[in-house]
Image (tube, rainbow, N blue to C red; front, side, top):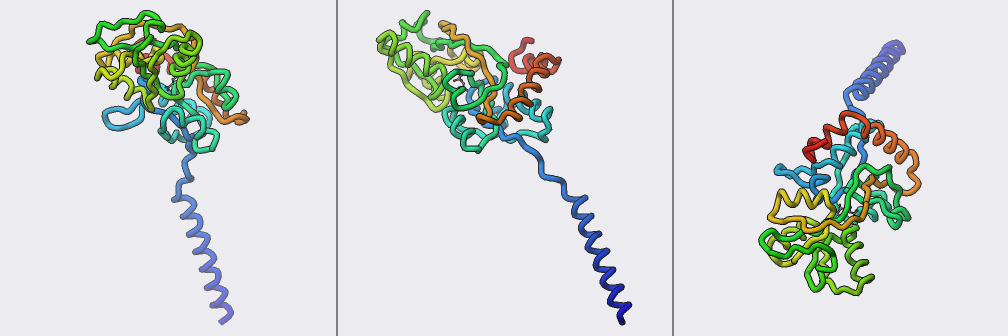
Length: 257
Ligand code: GLN
């Protein structure tokens, strides 16, 4: 009798171990994802393609960097541009990849990687109109669209305050909405980063009428104090920008390398 009980116990133990091993082997470990926040209205850096996917230069770049530093993939979380820094601070995302200009003011709230792109501001107007301002003072009395919380908005608000020139500034939650209003004639101009203005020129009946040299540089942003993540991203970004993959990526989204 004792022998039977012992044998039974042995069988149970072996079966339990077997099940345990099987479970361990057959259940893949959870994927390690880098949570990337973006505002997909900034082509070619981030936009929504015909299939409804969030794609773009920034998305490809941050995915490549994430893989280089040990993540399986990225998880893209979209929101309005001005919600990105608060979301990062609250821990809803790990990185901002949104053509974000490195500014002293933002540096008080987030840490930026090394820069990966240069930009200025463009004055974008409707092709069909004959309004072709060559400098911001010609925007006096005009309706000018910007995206909330962007350097374009900061520039034109500051310009108005500095010069006393009265501009009717309209802030939009997204650049795409601003450009649509420009095409429809509801506003007279849009102030937007130069590389994105060039892309809008190809997609809509709009044209760059002037460039305002602001000398901006884009970086990815992480939470203040996330030094390990920042250092890893910086190293990966530095290596990537020197590689052939970088020229391929630039070619893919800008058509030149
Ligand atoms: N580069 C601009 C900024 O940082 C605009 C970025 C954007 O709209 N995605 O404010």
